[in-house]
Image (tube, rainbow, N blue to C red; front, side, top):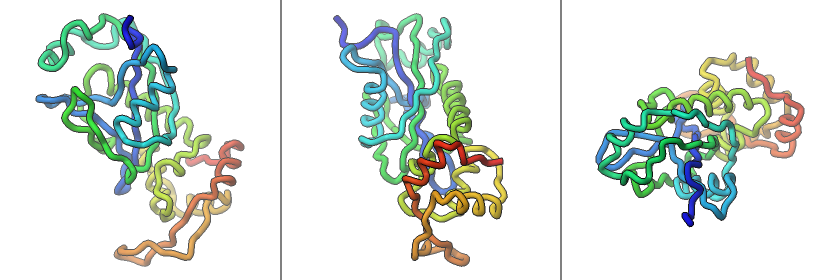
Length: 239
């Protein structure tokens, strides 16, 4: 019996934040210009969540990852199988292609600085791409990415997004730009800082960010206990 569950896979939208930009981790396939999201099949001996953790560890070298299952992609015809076979015929043997595959979508939030991107056996690169510069992806992965981003936006007020995307120490402008890059719109900086400080989810440190052109902003850290309380109350809304 096969080690994997046939016709059931998972795809991962791995978000990172760097240089004021939301990024997503993509795989570039060998001897081609084709990109896709990381993913894989699920072993008979593991749960779907465990499979997602395994795939994410293989691609990022991280063990502790914020992970959310957001959608199951189960259309009878999700993409043109003949086109995919043609594009990947130099890498994948015919038997691996199924006429129908159901995929479970996960999104992950990771600290960009802690990730060591690692390609799989079919790909030559695993690299970060700005969310606004994502190319046409293989399979239905653009749809999966867009659905993952939409899910992240919908859950922004209830999940510890900043705790997982930002470094241990950050500035208030860093935090604001993170939320802006996810939402795809600007936020009034005065209202943002006032709202964040009022919640008590951050602690201002006696340190400033070095190497900036203008007045050095203070560094902050999250109060994880208070952050959790505010999220449970649904207290982080941005307009």
